[in-house]
Image 1: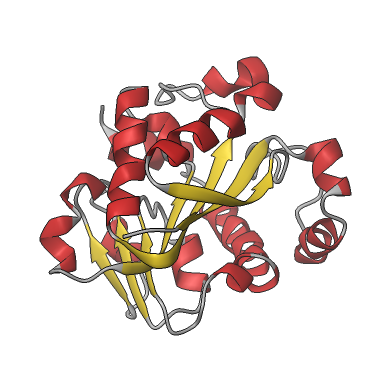
Image 2 (image 1 turned 135 degrees about the vertical axis):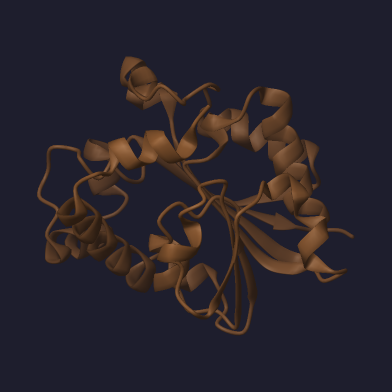
Length: 222
């Protein structure tokens, strides 16, 4: 599948990309940063337009994505790798990560076997006590709209992700089954102040508008 062509069409509006980045600035500062030590090695397994990896603070950042435009969007402090995350070991050089971040990626894989394989790669390359953070559309709440994107292939819920992670030597630490709306194009105000308020009102706000899950898993053994 031609990922570059899909995303160039899907996100052709530059203003929409700028607005999306502003949303991620708030999400990173007021929510995600608390799960990521500032002295950590952080790996984003499918960075897209780098809204997360650019706006989070971490000592060392590595971003993977198959889109050849990746390096155009990554900040200078990000090692941008235009390759499959499944080639991770060719880039880590024996190091282990403190945090892996996976946002809206697992649904694009070819099968549930690949989902388990990707989680296992994260687990195998995490330090003991390290964390895997997953932000993922939850088909339980998105329902049929899950298939509105041609590149969505695997249906997942928070419970199926938990089951897969446990198989890969990870323990669940945080689970918001209903966290964010399905897409940044969802029909609710997206001003930075509103996003900030939405986070402050979690989990109540998520109960009404959340269609994506957020989960944190910990590596508990070597």
